[in-house]
Image 1 (cartoon, one colour):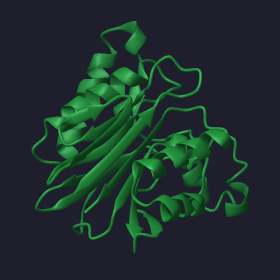
Image 2 (spheres, helix red, strand yellow):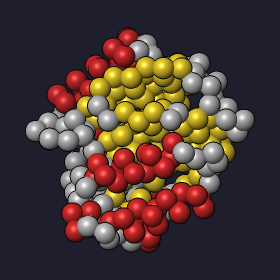
Image 3 (cartoon, rainbow, N blue to C red):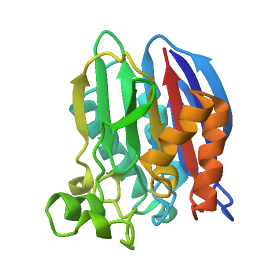
Image 4 (cartoon, helix red, strand yellow):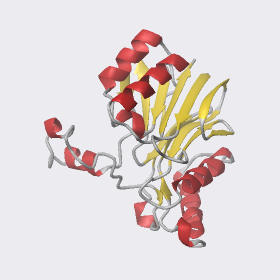
Length: 239
């Protein structure tokens, strides 16, 4: 699979709290391209409202790179270790990160906790979201407490309800499932992208520029124009 990844520090931020994981490589800033046959494609997005988001995302990314198998038990162990680490220094207290991605092997495994997203690009045109957001917004939408037409103006779009860390094991509710081997391109985004531009806009950009670095750059530019000041990460994978 050919991989293009790009991550960019947020506006007026001194440090990027996103980490992209490609196989055993971790990208903290800039553009990265490679080919892999197996391994992880993922984004860990350090929670900016908490302490040490970059420490949390880096820790989980490093642990993910060393995994041979993907399962809830292993992820739970990493979460407990992260919580233990957060208690060792006051500046780490409550540190947290999302994690969404896939592990490509003989069996392809999808995993996510938080609000980074994995999409499948069906027919190389139409984005299908494979993950579900752990956010207050998504909870209110799925329980019928908020109408879809009111979602755009909802003030707390990026308020997450599950993560790695966060000072409590109760927040760790990762979803892990085996899925069919990809026969379509995939895309993974942090919320700095998909909270600001729509699926229709992303499809239009990919339709114009293809599965390319240029498409990533245009999506980032569009998200910035639409008000995103957050760290931004995008991964595109194409057979």
